[in-house]
Length: 389
Ligand code: FAD
Image: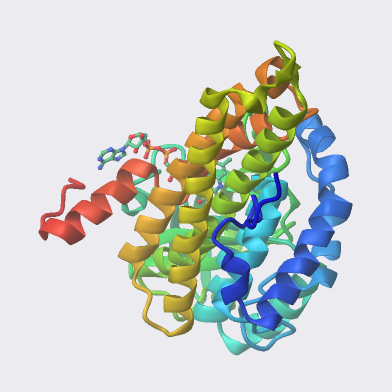
């Protein structure tokens, strides 16, 4: 039966994008099709991400693409969001790599750094020739980053950094770590280049989520840094929290991409898998699942687009980003779980993308503020009552 709708863009959201946004989206989608999808199942299986991907993503122009100057493309927030959607339709680990590089490490330097720091790092990071990571979480300090123990003390003009960061994406690959630490003057950010005396990393093994991504511990044992290593603009916890809000915006979009990839796999599989003499898509209960998935994918994409338009108009506030992250990641998890069941036993393998997305999304719902934390942000905004503590 001919249908007037595109199953993967049921609400014709494409038609409200600009030509430039569509072009960027198509370019990233083609990169994911040609460069990510053929290998990502193996990378996930082997627990690695190829280092050369950074320079390929740099050439693609997506590293720090929404930042102005210093070799960055300066696109709209919506265009950046569309790129995140396509990258995460490939794999959440690849979108994480791009988010951490562009929205956490590069954004921190762009927003809070000195002119010298920007000149030194941003052009190389935009090209993917230098890799960045963002160290906020610690073994005993996750949802409550204000409780961090990593500390930098003054010693003459220098700083001496001591402590450890945990769960740091791109950690052991990074040429520069943006590290947040307590000081006598409050929480400050420091740029710690790879190879600095006393700075070591250790990769976290045995992950069963976000496997096509490097996650590391960063250890600082009396690391001496010059005064110029400190980010001059960030003087409190607001420094890292501003960066996190940027990165969460990308997650709002990315989650919609992971969900779309699961819907696509479920439609393909259910229309070709024959049981009881018919494609399983002929059974009403499977169609109900597909309809619910399509609804969630379209709702998530519209929510992301709305937040993108607000951000481009300079009107987006962090509580709205929290709503987007909470809603879209939970929706993507529901879609992935349903899709996995549609695929039966095949659904648990890496031959199909669904289980990979499902396990990845368990990280996405946890990092950059857990679902609980974002629910509390919404609760606080709705009631005026802070329920964090
Ligand atoms: P906890 O804060 O210990 O929370 C445990 C549980 O308690 C959660 O369910 C949480 O919702 C709940 N909880 C906590 N506080 C409250 C409260 N007040 N009210 C109700 N419930 C509460 N961090 C970085 O700094 N940089 C990175 O690059 C980075 N990459 C990551 C990559 C991966 C693969 C993973 C898994 C994590 C990464 N993280 C990174 C860390 C991530 O941001 C933290 O895991 C997250 O902030 C949650 O902290 P936690 O794991 O310590 O959980």
